Amino acid sequence: MTTFRQLVFSGVQPTGNLHLGNYLGAIRKFVALQDSNDCIYCVVDLHSITAQLVHEDLASQTRSITAAFLAAGIDPKQHIVFNQARVPQHAELAWIFNCVARIGWMNRMTQFKDKAGKDRENASLGLLAYPSLMAADILVYRATHVPVGEDQKQHLELTRDIAQKFNNDFSARIAELGLGVEMQMGDETVNGFFPLTEPLIGGPATRVMSLRDGSKKMSKSDPSDLSRINLTDAAAAISKKIKKAKTDPEALPGEVEGLEGRPEADNLVGIYAGLADMTREAVLKEFGGQQFSVFKPALADLAVHKLAPIAGEMRRLMADPQYIDTVLRDGGERAGAIAEQTMHSVRDIIGLLQN
Image 1 (cartoon, helix red, strand yellow):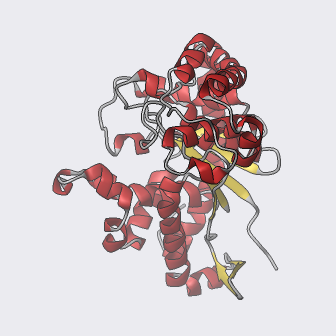
Image 2 (cartoon, helix red, strand yellow; image 1 turned 135 degrees about the vertical axis):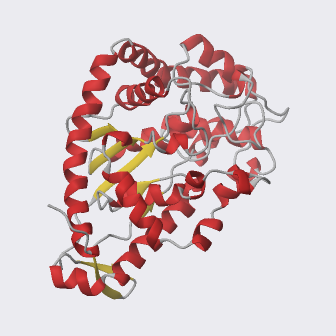
């Protein structure tokens, strides 16, 4: 049976400094996946204007995300690293998907409801159509797998719905042009042009919370810099923030169940597990019964060991913007060649005239 070539795609928005949550929840996964997959990693600058049209320095933020990719260990020669705006086929396919997707699908997206708030009528059309562009980002490369956090899982489900509706709506034309690829859907083998992309979700620290409030997600928009560890933080800052992190007076439990109802303790154990590539169970086996006065210094040492080299390399790369621009330009050319192959076929399937 002919199948889609396995390809991993993911992207990060250039909206301010990256932090520990971005690293553990996304970038570290990107690095690991490149060892056994062909990967395309994108700085999704078009997405960044859906909620905030005017940025102080979007170009600098784009370079900063790219520097983080490279400093963490992504290889731009073996894989593709680029910024979304360099490949106009993303926007072209997004428009077609706007015509495939249904308004009701978009209205059900919880992220739109959260970001639009009570004044939904004043939200931008781009914010509503954000998931359609995300689907285009993935499917313009016919990517088979996407590493995502829990908050993006619904968007990936929508990507699958869009792909399936396109495949169904144009099934006869896809077959006529010989562009279909067989894939398995449960017990049924079906034929389609776009894959039904699978999410890659998992790991001990997929959702990193604030160091000041374990009930809130770590965020670059939090007014307190002590709430997060930025990837550009120096060793002293990393250590200080962990030692000042909010905790409770109890010792660490010996079992994972003992973390229930203790959000700050659960968060710090998860961070240690993520940085050390251990399970929560293994962390508690080592530190169960210990006070935070023992655990925090160990966590601070681990975080400095893992993150300080990345911060140093990011600063070095940001001092050479021409090199970063060269990486993005080369990646954009390689990504664009793949995207244009897809779009040439999509135009044929729909019946659009082209050269």
